[in-house]
Length: 98
Image 1 (tube, rainbow, N blue to C red):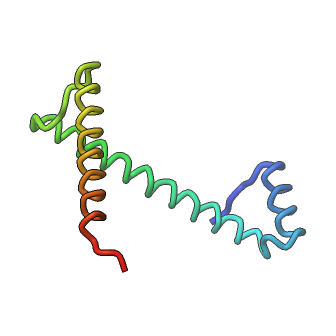
Image 2: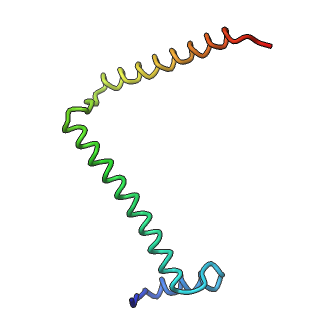
Image 3: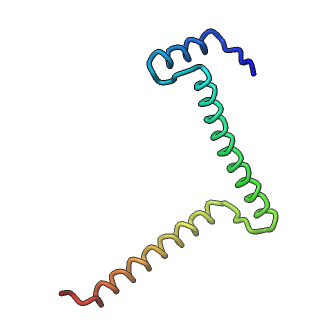
């Protein structure tokens, strides 16, 4: 495969080789492809998550987001947190100290 780099890209690769960061021009191409592959995998994961979210909404599993629904959600979270804290405090009272 023949890859044509811009003058700036060639200088960038040359600088990496001169500094010891890379040994050969091919190493720069391999690293670039590796980073691109990693980015594309992340992109595919995000797209799959979006597809799953859309399917969930289509099945009616979604929750409408309104000011009221957000207040209710916040209250539910606070209630669960308070209940967990109360359970932890009760458990501490029941645990014998040495």
